[in-house]
Figure 1: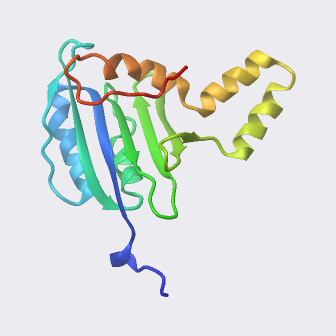
Figure 2 (figure 1 turned 30 degrees about the vertical axis):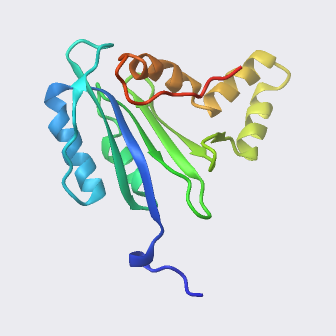
Length: 173
């Protein structure tokens, strides 16, 4: 069996969720994502009820492994832009999720094949070492490792519309 070449790279797919963008920024978002995907894209934009004058969209993409990182990098740091990019887990590889907000910047979390966030052992050990015996600090460190601040801030934009086609089921119990 031979190693895959660039042309035989394993396929990937995922979703881009732009939770809020000013109308004037929308064509630039499409151009940036198009460059990352190496093809032109056109998004179906809709109003974002949680932020007056902002628009939202979601776009399903396919490409090579690492395309999610390329998309997130293309959009990273844009003020006034709230987004998430996912890359599904594939054969022999975990998935990824990038979340960005203007106030927090960007965070990356690893996702397993069942859609769960994966916190690597070294990250947990580091959190424990930094927290010492302080349970509240350990709680803060673990929330940071899970990207909880980003989830909390983006939830308002995820649930802003009764007609949103995506239902997030990440909270149970």
